[in-house]
Structures are given as C-alpha cells and as structure tokens.
Image (cartoon, rainbow, N blue to C red; front, side, top):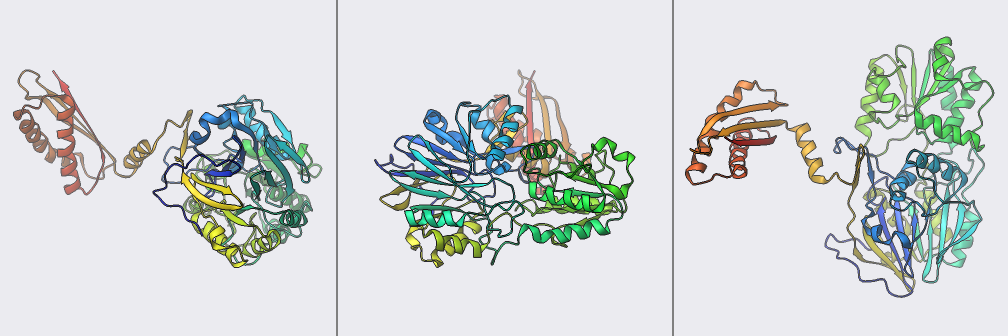
Length: 561
C-alpha cells in the first residue's frame, strides 16, 4: 500500500504513453471532489465540487479546489465530466468556468440542469453534452463510457475512461440499493463487463468503507416517515439537502396520504425541486404543493414545510427558525424531521439547531432516534462485491476522510488486490499509471481556496488565523503620540480592548510597562514608528499573557507629532 510522504517533491514530466491522476480535492475530506486525468498532453476533469466550512473557518462561505495546478493548462482540458448533481461535485464549476467559460460540461440530464441553473446566477452560458448510461463519448484522447449507479440523487453515473496508456473506472458517489425508488440499479453487469475488458485503476467511493454490511434501501425508511406524519399534532417541518429528490418524493407521498399540503422553503430547494419536477424526476401529486405565503390560511395539522439546513448551516432556513429569525415561527407541538445524515465536522452545528428547536417546544425526529435517513454510499459489503466483480489491477480510494480511504484500501487488499497496487493519496499527490502499475511520483501545491463574500482566493490561512484570534482571544489597540523632536511620549498610551471579561481598569497596569519599554528603545536610538510599534506589541503581549493568560490580537499605533 503506497502512502504519500510529506516531503514529496514536484513530479518529473509524465512519461510517453503514461496516464497521470491528480486529485485537487476529495481525498482526506468529504467534499470539493475533483480529479484531473492527463494523457498525451490533454486533461480530463472529473467533478468540480465545494467543501462547506466548519467552525474553524470563521467568515468563509465556501471552500474550492485549488486550481493552480491547471491554471496554465485550461486550453488542454477536453471536458469536465460530472458524475452527479450534489454540491460537493458541481458547486465549484462556476468558479472554474469563470477562468474559461467554453470548457465543455458532460453529465446526465438532471446533473446538467442543476449546474446550468447555478451557472445562470454567475451569468455563464456553458457548452454542455448530455449523456446517459450505456453511452460512449470521445473527449479528445479520452474515450469515456458512462455507467448507471445508484445514489441519493437521481441520474448518477460512473465513468470508465479508456486511454492508450490504461483504463480508469471512477465510480463517483454510489451505493447498490437493490430496491431503488426510481428502479434505476447500479449496473453491476456493466461493472463485470468492464472488469473483463480490464480495469487498470479503480477509483472508488470510500465514504462508508468503515460501515460493515450493506446500506439500508431507501424504501425502508418510508414506514418511519409515515409514522411521523401519523403522530404529528401540528405542523411538520422536514429538513434535507436541496438536491435530495428521493427524500422529497417520499415526503410528498406521505403528505398526500395524510391529507396535508406541502410548501417548499429556501431558494435552492424551490429551484432544484422545480428542475427535478420539470424533467420528470420528481412526481408532485395533484393539489399537494402550495405557496409558502398561503400557509397562514391552512390549519397547522394540515401543513408540511420542506426546507434546507439539515447540516446546521447558519444562514439556512432551519437554523434561522431555531434562532427565531424566520417568518416560520416554530413552537409547541410542531414536529421537525431531519431527513439527512451528519457530514463529519457538522455535528456541533446540527446539535445546536436541534437543541434550539426543542427549546422552542418542537419534537425533533432525526437519524439518532428514528430510521428517517439512509446513506447514499456503499457500505463495506457492497464495496467487497465491487472489487470481486471488477477485479482491478490497481486501486485508488477516493471521496472520504483519511480513515475512510484506509478502510477502503483494506477491503481492496482483502479481495486479493496486491498491497503494492493500492494507492492511498492525499489532495495534490501525483499518481502515474505506467505499464499497468499505479505509483505515487510526487506532489503539486494544493491548498484551500476560500470564497469570502465576493472575494475568491484572496483569503489565506494568515487571515483565517487572524479571525480565529479575534474570535477566541480578543483584541487590544494601543495608541501613543511621540514627540518627534524629543523622542518622548506626548500623549497616551491610549488602550482599547474588546472581548475581555476583565474590567478596563486592569489595563492601567500595563501603561507603565509600555512607557518604560518605549523609553528604553528611544534611549538606544530607535526612532522608526514601525520598530517602536513592535516594542509596544511585545510589552503588551508579555503582560497580557502573564496576567490574563490570553494571546489577543494586538494593534500598536505610534503617531509622530
């Protein structure tokens, strides 16, 4: 099993006839999935998604893949192949197409419709190629065949990439639900056929590799949803991903059965479900859907709301309801159904929302206390089947945190894949497929690209560190006016502190220390404002660290008068 090394250097040029694979996101994390495949000077991109920020990313809206590796080679990109329409696979497409709007997008009908709606907001009209399972398309030197896979969104595809230098089967996100709601199975017959042809590198979904057995079928949760609808006294508020068509379908069916009306809440939910309904993926029963503005005319026990916010996102509808910052006023007797799993890292935010809703008197039903969600990813049992069916020569686990990738690699090894032919890599690690063997050959720079309001990529780790300090440690500004002629303090030190529990009077103790430090510095001939500011910063930092046990942001200002 190959592991990346922190001291990997830039790779040598790709050998003639070889295939190079570089993940720019999705390895070691759940989100911002993006893989770049290179052969004969041409590039193929598979997926281009976003990662949602966690608590240690204050002020960040989205995290994108690092496009630096392909920045100078945009003309070499033959296409961006999108496996399905989830944000962690399509969300960064607008930011890549801003750099070159005519890169073709290839995907299924629903996937392209969702990404086109997103691009419309960015005023980009893309070149698209719609594909479906069973189709083959030549994209430059890449011969791509598309295979149906089952996931928590309709129309998901795996892609088999044939090149003269080797073949790659990329599953995208998938599971093997044998009773799917849309009757669209993961095509194991195609997997077997491709295995017979020869799969040189199998890039497979790792999210549930730690989970033993098989993922529960989607239809198994219908009784739990029906039970919620039977026992709810007042309104039912369902929170799920804005692209989870199957879950919304189940809620619509349960609402029709119980005689309730449904309103969609949230721009992305309304947009995505409108697209799914228009394309025939979502079947809306007659007279069930109503506008949210008409809810006031209906009795509470006849109302269902479907909204976003199942991951505790602060600006999503459910979080705002929990904070009483939404037109929907959640109260005693309401039932809130969280119909989603927890994305790693979001646990605290989700439990904060659950607690807020329960404090308001709502009954909250979630995966922890009822069978109201099933995963969209293959568990260990399903992955074992895939390895035995495909019989790949080399394996590269994708889509998951480090623990998921390692668990997936262990499954591959159990099925007989040679340990030396299993590549566990991180974002930016370069893997070359040469003469049927996959090897790590180096690494390229691959950091996080932050979206902060209208700024993209201008936000770096240093700024993020400053924000964390401001949030966690507080802020002190110190202003001193120096007499330029004498080098003595003419006014100040004026101290302003924010984020401290201590009374402002405590900062009087540090004034003599600042004065003494400045006197010693000017006595040694220091006159530059910047140098004097650093003297003040050290004096204040030393005192506040010893006295208050804090490391705040300190902004010293010296004015020469």
